[in-house]
Length: 548
Image 1 (cartoon, rainbow, N blue to C red):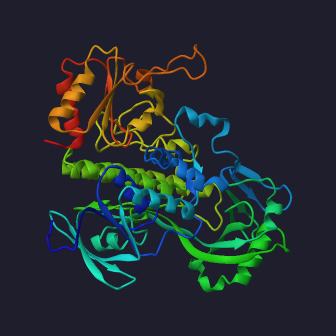
Image 2 (tube, helix red, strand yellow; image 1 turned 30 degrees about the horizontal axis):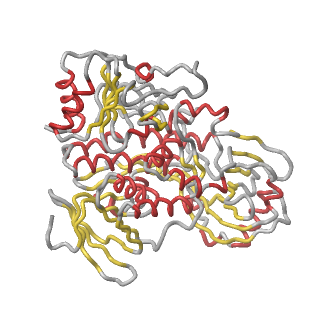
Image 3 (cartoon, one colour; image 1 turned 60 degrees about the horizontal axis):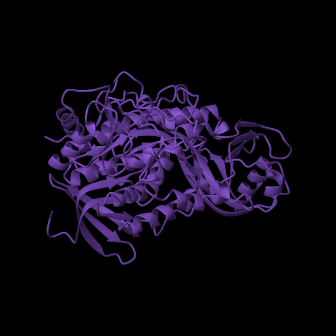
């Protein structure tokens, strides 16, 4: 560390929106001191980015803030589905989908579910959670320059309130600084993909009469398709606060100045189908949808996360969720390296794991925008042609084919055609309800601060003792649980309730074992007994963690 720096921290985070705040939260949970700087004066005030998918909610569940998020999201708890209609007057139109989890089938795969929580409501929850964990988060502070060397990064930060400058020396820098990312540009990292897709003007407005027009249709979003006034309507409180996305065509020379309050009011009234609707514009902001992925996520000790690494069409809310999952993948690896139980080369797997996921997911997002005929999107030939279909395989079933995993099939697709969570290396580990020390938990709740080895009490191979010895002798964070001893099954419905076969669920046998990473992804599994469990497991752990 450079002794002349004003502040010295293991990690400097640039950007304090959803992804930066999530990075802070996850690092705080893992005991990694860090500093976050954000140029704006506070969290988002615009209700956007509301769809938090089931994988993101699993991460927030393990991080301990799921209840707080559900409280913040309570106003929209009963909103489901996407409606497409030429007008809201009458009962015309059709539901593109009415429920995101019809029949409640998701409960087989996860202990949680989707949550509709707008960015302006979610960010304060993340901020409070991060600060409770000791995060040093500074708003109205902007990183101006940075330089890196073999041992760390030195940054100059300006306090925008006082105009004072100070230096920060960090071992690593995480850039969550948005789609125009000054850090990415400074590093000279290019981007690949179709580029800009379409643009909208997002308008917040008040209308007390609109709730009567909407009636009992509790949608997440409504695509209004009047050719002269198309757009997307989103409820904020189901009462009088709303958001409307109006198509904007800068490629035709249309300027933002043309979107006057009078024009927007008339547009909304016509789109809804009620010329006498009360509309009071309270704010507007422009945004552009794009499909781009950075050509690399890392340069030396600097990492890109969120919109600085990838841009996606908003349909399906894939972008923010992918960014939050970037942060989670990177956080455990930074913690492992900084705390000395993994080698620095583990950080190289951040790019090899997350970049293919973003490439595949961004293509699915564009395809979904085509499928839903998103207002303002007239795709050029070849754009939006990725596979369509179910959403669960995209948000929950993606795979890491290369990286901190052993035994993957590199010929598989990153995003499969169907959801398959059966313990394959590189996939999110299966969810089962179990009892640990008298408490009912999901197996997913075991995965956060350490590697975890699952084995069976009946196994002829003593995987459990092998893991304990490795943790003690090698200084690795490795916890071990035997199903039947440390983890047990309690019937939920009746005494006749059949216990799930954990080994079958995880694609192994009672003599085998499964190694799960701190982010809940399967690192490796053994199909059965081995002659020397300790030697086998030690080699696996060293390979996964990139230790000598």
